[in-house]
Image (cartoon, rainbow, N blue to C red; front, side, top):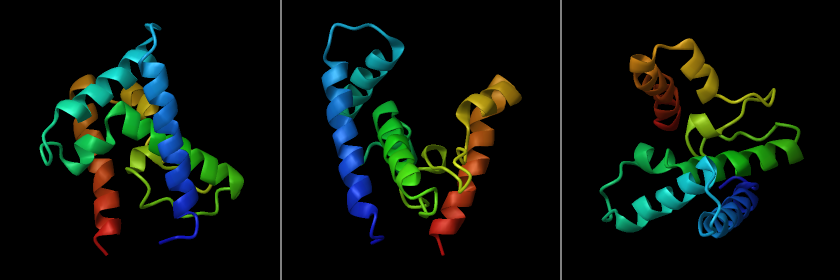
Length: 131
């Protein structure tokens, strides 16, 4: 594995601890509720019932990968290949921009085709990892 994989894993899992603690507070922000619900989905899902993409797009996983990728990128001046760390939506380009900016995608795409556009963009990762 890449020499930064252990650090990325440590940051990712530490972020889950933060999310879990925040998700179990009385706060009612959308983010807190999202963390709590994502952990509930993981707890209630039987092994193998979530696809790889479904799992990685749960808020807690998506955000933990994004946070870890951001930290690694910032520490290395965006020189580390992040292509195996979460989905493209939680990865950054060498210029520190998101590979898939979900807010920009929602603003530039009709609501009924956001998922189709997202899946199209995700094919690039599938093709890259299939090599």
